[in-house]
Length: 253
Image 1 (cartoon, rainbow, N blue to C red):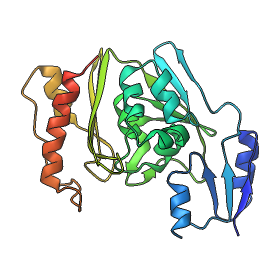
Image 2: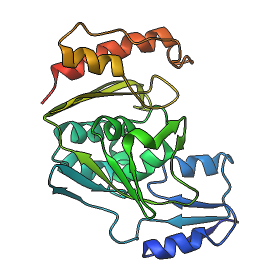
Image 3: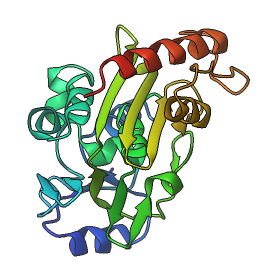
């Protein structure tokens, strides 16, 4: 039997998680609930973050757009002032998924084919939690792995406002997850390019960044460490990365 808790504050949520046993945070539930139904997860307790105050909403402060971790995909799609981020959110799943899924849940899970990690990395975001702050470049550690400590709660994300940005993905026709997605963001000091869906986790494509900034020919992505599965081989994903990069560059705004 799994106990269910609905705290109203971060302090209550953290205290419940510190109580011992296998405790899982529930955000949108699109990863956790299917895992529980298939018996891949059987936590002792669920801590539902939906009613914790202060975890939702979108605002701009200086050169950053701040988005609460419990903000739904549909809200980001409708309200995010960074056009590329809004369009990314609008392409996640279907309307039902967008009405329930959350930014924080997606990033904390760090599925290698998820869309949001590419935006977090390309837009040089900071990730604030109930214990501290992480830079995007230090946050993603590989497949389903992040720098978050046990029971740490993401509270909000601060995305840098770019001069121009765009996201292009080749989506799986059923799940809408990215077989390959490329997010490009231009800042005064240079371009950031993040790739999702292709490897074990989101990563920056440094060769593409250098080529764009130098006005040189765009490179091909090496296929050595890319995913190869029933959906696409590594070489095909490498090819798709180049196609998505060009599409994103053509849509920069």
